[in-house]
Amino acid sequence: MSDVLELVDVSVVRDGRALVDDVSWSVKEGERWVILGPNGAGKTTLLNVASSYLFPTQGSARILGEQLGGVGTDVFELRPRIGMAGIAMAEKLPKRQTVLQTVLTAAYGMTATWNEDYDPVDEDRAKAFLDRLGMNDYLDCRFGTLSEGERKRTLIARAMMTDPELLLLDEPAAGLDLGGREDLVRRLGRLARDPYAPSMIMVTHHVEEIAPASPTS
Image 1 (cartoon, helix red, strand yellow):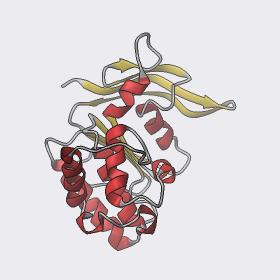
Image 2 (spheres, rainbow, N blue to C red):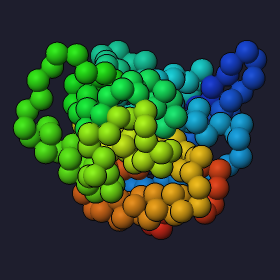
Image 3 (cartoon, rainbow, N blue to C red):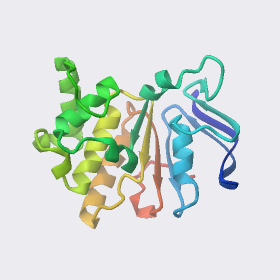
């Protein structure tokens, strides 16, 4: 199996403080990983490097065969190959859009609808991902009216929309009540066991949010 992510001696330093210090780690095609640790441990920083939105201060990062900062690497071509779901993405999405529109915009790499026309195949894919995450009854609901759990499931469906080779989940169960968390963990477990699902990395600081079939780091 080829490496989807390869970090070698990676450090990220901001204002003289090491957010990540000398990390070497590789994720192979088809693997499912969980980064577990307390707040401030550098989990989200690692995920931001894996998403290509943050470059290491030291060391090297290779994502989907592309070297970050390397000659010929275009991050704007790389990023659509990576699905990302987390609080940062939720804050960028217009609350007035419907659930279906929220997922569909990912097909064009956008956060909001403009004047684009979507093919029937795009709508079918969006509906299929939403159905898989239990959101089929919410297609016409506005994103801003959803509960926290419903938003989380919509974001994961959106992250899957581009058929990513790497799926990154930043604390997907944060803010959910017990029932909502158990439901989401169960759905993520099914996704993790799907042999056709992309390589997955999830960040959390709660052991009980780890779905079965995920090794931890």
